[in-house]
Structure formats: structure tokens, C-alpha cells
Image 1: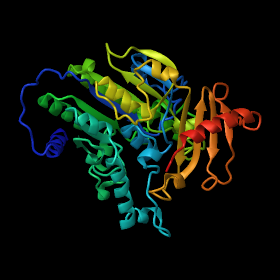
Image 2: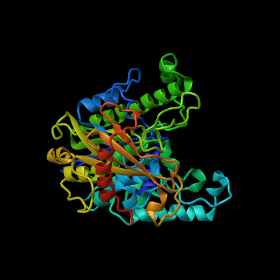
Image 3: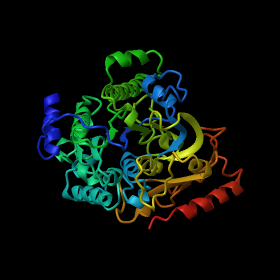
Length: 439
């Protein structure tokens, strides 16, 4: 297996490179971006879960700048990941949905095989090529980059990566990862091989580690599942919890590799989940108010930033967002971010403190119109302090109601206060409307 991935990496490089002694470490830091997949904001030891054991993430949180109130831009994987890599909201980078419009009258599996679907996916990939991405900007400053794991936009080069695993091969699950989906569940060797290659080149590196974990299929090792069989409310929940711990183990393995290679002090580690998840205890699928919803169960995630001796470990009470990662990581590397990014540099302590609001939108799983993001809208949401407003789209959610929650008193959004506090709804609605410029 190790030799196989060495060959794959050599082909991605355009030919194998001769081994030579490592040169001095680059002055700019390396970056390891870790993204878990379908992971609830509550499901970490450091976030207070009573049963789940996440010792590696707990250690990372203790040693990091931690934002417990982080938010992704979308409760769907594809647009959320596109926002992480571009630093923009879905209506700005235009990848609002997991899939393009599906041909009418066909079962989903058959629709995926049509030329119309493939062309829609290709158009979504071209959207990503039209804006600066984190690996593309880093590459302009001498970085090598590696894509491993979940990836919806065809070949890894569409995102600006210099190297990667996903080829966009429809015959091998190219819709969202193909060979890249082996990372974490089967092997970490491709990442280790890439690090060795970057060291031979004496270049700083960026790694996108986005394994399909704890995302279903929930097939954890029995040694982990056994820990949760008796404390979980059902077997499907136990399987999901064991998947979370399995993902946690891979973080420990990656950190150990960095430490063994003498790279730990020269590497920024950033972490977040791509969207939330609450397991239905009977079916094992996602429950309401989680994935594909505008609630915190679908949108909230802790965000961690770590680099020994450079980023002070602290627990921040401020809001943070997935769109903050691109300006933050570029700033930490001494690289100016694109001037029109909506996020802030989280390492500038004044910026998160000045932020008083955060906004976002959730869209249809299958796009209605790739050219007009507003036609794909389901909900808009806004947060001011601890107040959260949810506004349904009248076309795609005609039966929806405006909702207002006090997240400090009601973190699981069970009591809608919209009718009791119309002034607060109106104030936050005006701010949300001012933010929303989809066309």
C-alpha cells in the first residue's frame, strides 16, 4: 500500500523525484487543515459530551485558540467545503447546493449518470476556478498543497491544489471524492508521502485533510463500537459515536507524524466540521434540526487554531465563522488575503471582539438554478449576540415560519420567541436583509 501511494504521488508530481537530503525548514509555516464530516457541535469531550471520548481533539483544544461558537456557511457538505476553501459565502462563490439540477423523471442514481448531471457538476467546478482559493493563493507564494478526503469539485486541481487524491472519476465515486475517500478510514500514507516530498523540495505545505468521518456509512472498528454499546441510547447512535472516536484517533496519528518529523512547531493546525449531525436513534440517518437545517445542530462547530509558540491557547467567547479561515491562515503566513473576503483574521484579537453579528443561508440539496443563487434558497439566518433569527424563503419553504431563539437560554432551539419579541425580530431582519445580496 505504501509503495502504491508513492507511485500515485509521483504521477501527480509529473514524475518521481530523486530522494535527497532535507533542506532547512521554510520560513513560512506549514498548514494542516482538518475537517470532520457530519459532526455535531456537542460531540466532543471538550464540548461537554457525557460519553464520547475524543482525547486527541481535547488535547488539541487545550493547546489552541478555541472558538466554541463557530459557524459554517451551510448545513450541506458541498457548499460548506467550497466556503472553507474560498473564504466566501455560497451565494458569493455560487456553489449553493450539493448537486446541480437533476433531470426530471429519473431516479437519483440514474440521474447521476446523465450527461446533463455531469455538465452541471463541471459548471460547479468552474465556479470554483473563477475565485481565489486558499491553496491557489498559497501556491503563488511557494506552497505545495495536497487534497485528501471529501472533495466535490472533480479533479483536485480545480481547487488549486498542486497534488491530491481525488481525480473526479465518476466510475469510482467521483461525485464527492473517489480515491480521496480512502483517507482516514483506510490509510494516512498519502499524506505522509506528500510531506516527505515537500520536505525534499524544501517548500512549505498545505494539507486539506477532510476524511469522510464520522459521515456514514457508520462502520467503526468493533474495538471502538464495544465501548459505546451499553451507554448509547441505540445501536445507530453507538456506531456514530464510535466513528467520532475513530476520526479522533487519526488526528493523534497525524500529530505524532508531525512531531516525529520535527515539523510540529512549524505547522499551523486548524480544525472545524463541515456541518452538523444529530443521529436519529432508530434509523441512523440525520434527525431534524441537524444536517440540511438552519439550526445550530446543522451549522455550529468549534473552530480551533494551533501553533506552538505562535498562537496562544485560550478559550474565546466570540463568534467565529468558516469564512474566517482563509484570511486567518493567509495572515498567519504573512500573505495578504484577497481584499473582498467577508471574513476576519481570528488571530487579530480585535477583529472577533468587534464582530457583533453573523449571517448565513441554507439552500436546496439539488440546485434549482446554477446561475441564480436566490432561487435555491431555503432559509436565511442571523445571529446577534445570543439571539438567532431564522427566515424561511417563501418559495422553497412556503409553510415555514419566522423563528427567533435565545441561544444562551435555549441552545437546542426549542422555544420560538418570534411572536413575543417582534421588535428584536424586526431589528435583526433589517440587518439580515442588508447582508443578503445574492445577485
